[in-house]
Length: 406
Image 1 (cartoon, rainbow, N blue to C red):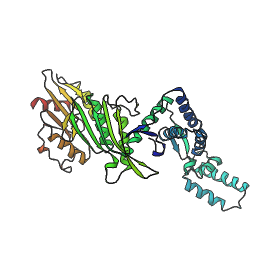
Image 2: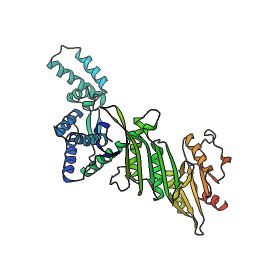
Image 3: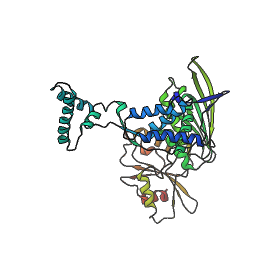
Image 4: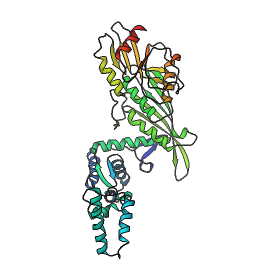
């Protein structure tokens, strides 16, 4: 994402409009020029790269755009490493100790480096050259880090990332956000809900899978003390939202004028037709090897029950439960299966609380014997749905027995 000083937006009444670049020849060429600067500096120092980026900015009036492209490349496509034969403080100690034994001069400096190179080559069982010692002396300084890996995006993807980052920056100062996720594929909902939890956002969910869900999120400026970190967490949710087919969003914003020191209320709206492109990968077919193994072994079971993945959602007060599987019989019966594997106590307590709120649906809960339910404050006897216990692997036959005996 972009820091606040590289964000560009304008006001249209109360509405904030972030800057978005057209994907045209001029901007594609500019993006390629930025990428070329990084490509030229692979295996060179960060100070060399920074100098080339200053040249790239020049005195151009669009220096903030150029600086923004460079920031995204440096943050997401580069690997900088400290390259030194020894940890730099230790290397400096070795060099200075040897240097103290001679009178300073160009000749003795060369001799000192040659002597230490020979010693280190023997100690490390690898050829160490004097130049490597010279470069490694202050390799722990940021400007001396080496750009060892550059994974370049295409110019088009870089422009898409820039446009997305401009929109993400809008949410740094949001006070409240309302997302309407319309009727979609259930797996898309699950991916969105997973990211809501991953970024530790404060949210409330209403609705159901047939009509869609309304998700209300408290923004960073609604906290007792506005948190930049929380604003970044909300911004990180936007690329996940782009995986949902149909949605709309409205946000209330608090922007501060640095000159007048006043706060201005703004509005921002976005929907699934926004044209933004996510860089987040799509959801994995399975959340764990446990689920994947169970699904594979179910196929070898001789049963008319068909196993389906993430096809149903159960609304519960303030949230939603997305069972891992649904089992469907040709006669019309269906049973939901939730697997509770290896999780922290807080998760267990919440999961079993959700199960107690499930109404009007048949549900089987598969629980690992490795879990310390007592420590989590959970009693299996309080759960009204059938439980299937398992050790290393969840056995399909045990699940089948539970649904047919229920």
